[in-house]
Length: 75
Image (cartoon, rainbow, N blue to C red; front, side):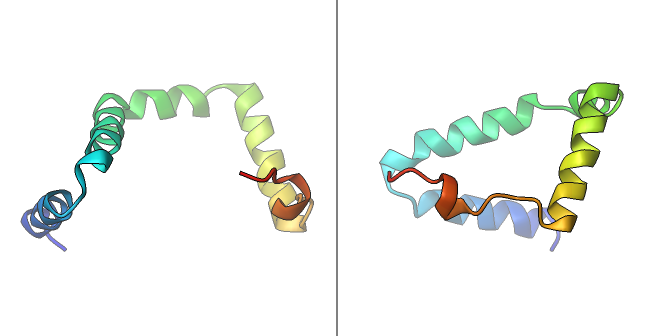
């Protein structure tokens, strides 16, 4: 999908949303706008983060995870 088509789909989706959802969409878009690859590079260069990240990936791969039902609170 090209950029123009993507922008048109986003525009159409926003135009079809109820007003109460628009502020959430705006917040999300602003977060995307302000985030940068620098933040990703900073995390990836942090040895502590990388150690935790690799452990989490290994835990997921080996099934060492908690079931949502076991930790979920009724919301």
